[in-house]
Amino acid sequence: MKRLKKIFPIVFLITFVLLPAGIAKATTILEVSFAEVIQGAELIFEGRVLSEETRPSPIDGRPFTYFTFEIIDVINGPYSGNYIELGFAGGTLRGLTLSVSNMRMPEIGERGVYFVESLTQELVHPLYGWHQGHYLVVTDPANLQEKVVPLLTNLNVLATAQTVDEFKQNVRDIMGGGR
Picture (tube, rainbow, N blue to C red):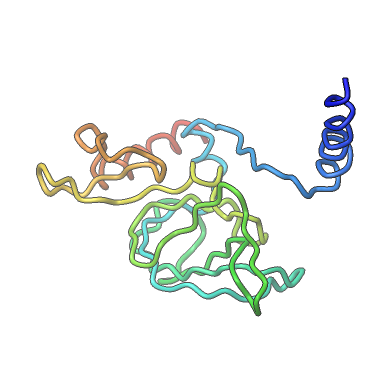
């Protein structure tokens, strides 16, 4: 009974003070279908990450990491430029580090297909469904074809993955059937 009396204040502190105060947090991303990712994205493009820069958000000053993408192909959406900048919450700025759990930011040099949720709003993560709107273009070593795979995938799926052209056509087909 004495042990229970010692543990209770700690459990109470975590459950009723720290969790509601936002000190102990977790990130939950709602799983959505591929069709929902397509239909929820304002812009879908194939591109390459050229650079990154951490600077304060113009809205609230929090650290945001901004990535510049070269646009290879606009698959859908109202964008005609050759480059686009997308901001992801997080980064280190003037000694302050902001980290968002379960956030996977792009890497310089990566090529992929990106499903941008909004071109006008600053979101914690600009891709629809976070990692669900982030696909990588990788070369299949078995046949040297460029294929598209989800960001969070085991590369053993390359044998069944779609080529870049097949993937983009699949997106266009779904857009045509869902709109």
